[in-house]
Image (cartoon, rainbow, N blue to C red; front, side, top):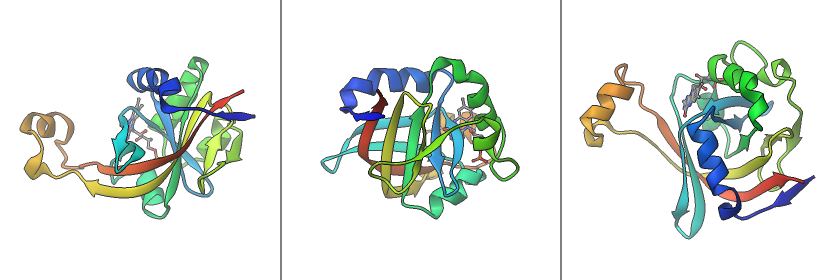
Length: 166
Ligand SMILES: Cc1cc2nc3c(=O)[nH]c(=O)nc-3n(C[C@H](O)[C@H](O)[C@H](O)COP(=O)(O)O)c2cc1C
């Protein structure tokens, strides 16, 4: 069972997990989970927006390019091993849902799936995207994070619903 909550109810925990072992971006049908450590949460266009950054080399990039909706799932601390699998293996090579023995469920508002084991999940719809532009990016960031010029695609997801496990 899931309960709909407000952003402020889960904001702190979501940012803490991002800065810790990461959280899962789930896209595609069948769904593929990818660990992410970078995201922002805020308010734009009178909507609650979550931005996620995906390098074009990822399998998840192909999935995000062929869909409108995705979910972001936050797991309990004991799922460190699974977060590592989802952050080091590609859905091109293995079925990460099966390998991690995740139970998946259909999203409540979005056309996507979420991981039932998650304590919090966000359901999002892409309303904007852009590729990071090196011409306007601080040179120190380019040097540190993009030596191979594999600039992230930034997806702006309108948050359709935020849910916790009951
Ligand atoms: C803690 C952690 C955070 C990560 N954050 C991101 C991220 O924000 N964006 C990204 O493109 N890749 C990120 N990665 C790398 C992807 O999770 C990894 O390359 C994954 O295997 C890609 O899976 P896919 O090919 O199934 O999409 C992260 C990996 C780890 C371990």
